[in-house]
Image (cartoon, rainbow, N blue to C red; front, side):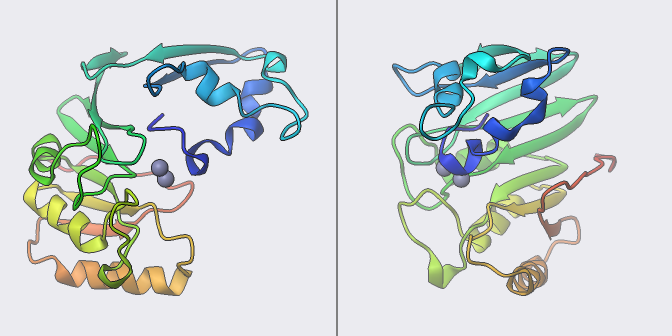
Length: 214
Ligand SMILES: [Zn+2]
Ligand SMILES: [Zn+2]
């Protein structure tokens, strides 16, 4: 989990594996101070918003509370980093057999939020990532400073600074049409001078193979 804003947890009550008794779900994340991971996720299954209480979830759900130390899942090393976002949150670097993927959604590169880091810190964190997925909600003339999201230009700047291989633009503006997204991605691509970096838009269900030689 990155954080617990509605747009990131609304799917949970409808997540079918949670209702199976042959499934174990491991949830990793960091709850805001004074709260638990379990309450942040399960307290949305309450009357009158949902008919099934969390006590009726039949999967075995294990909660793993993170600090900023790297941890290991079956040989894959995951390093959390604080997001620069209202109410905080965590981004992640995932490294496996020399490959590196960095996931920084809900991250505002151009404004300071409590607990967040600065542009150069994120560039260092994402250094040499084959794949960087980053918040790119706004065009420059739409930018809402302090809302916790970045412009496409800033996301591209970060990917260039970090020497990333691929940039996945993510956290699209909710009003954006598909055609507008296509134009936005095309403009971002033409803005990139380095032949090393490619850029694309993220969509639901996407699978990305990380196989480029470093
Ligand atoms: Zn958020
Ligand atoms: Zn969000």
